[in-house]
Image (cartoon, rainbow, N blue to C red):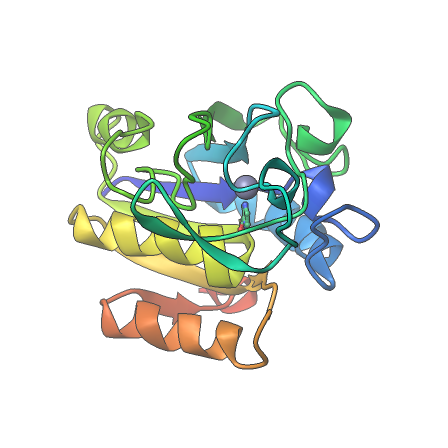
Amino acid sequence: MMKALIIVDVQNDFLPGGPLAVPDGDAVIPIVNRVQALFPLVVATQDWHPPDHGSFAANHPGRRPFEQIDLNGLPQTLWPVHCVQGSTGAALAAALSQERVAKVFQKGTDAGIDSYSGFFDNGHRRATGLGEWLKDQGVTEVYVCGLATDYCVKFTALDAAALGLTTYLLEDACRGVNLMPNDVRNALEEMRRAGVKIVTASETMNR
Ligand code: VGL
Ligand code: ZN
């Protein structure tokens, strides 16, 4: 059994003060920093959009953030401009320990399609390389943490489980957006139904 930690989108734009701030998002950083010591392999994902990305409300005249549209045949929530390639907002949080991050997988790079999962775009058309890379490293078990529980963390965990990896969610090392009040709770339930084991970083560290 080879295990890896997947740190999802711990980027400045998702932290308090950012354009797409996840409430209490910075609270995951010390937990993620501590839990890394348990893993022989640590990887991160990075939301990495071109300025003309189709998920930005600003690129759809007359549309507002958080409205739903059809984007090239897929339902798309429109977001404030965030994680533009090369911007400070797209950088991984400075307080996140990155010495042990073996590789960063970027996603959302195609303007025509969003990518919540760290493995595939939302249409499951293109892979980021994360799945192949984990397989090449002999990884059979992944622990997922980061931002946001109800979007990128959820889809990353669901894809990991679907790829046959034993998948854990570190619940206290995630925070969600909760556009609707029960979104995080529903996301946890959806992951659980898909076979993802919901655990806490503290219980994992004390095992
Ligand atoms: C995310 C919305 C848009 C996330 C990324 O990292 O959860 N959410 N882009
Ligand atoms: Zn995004």
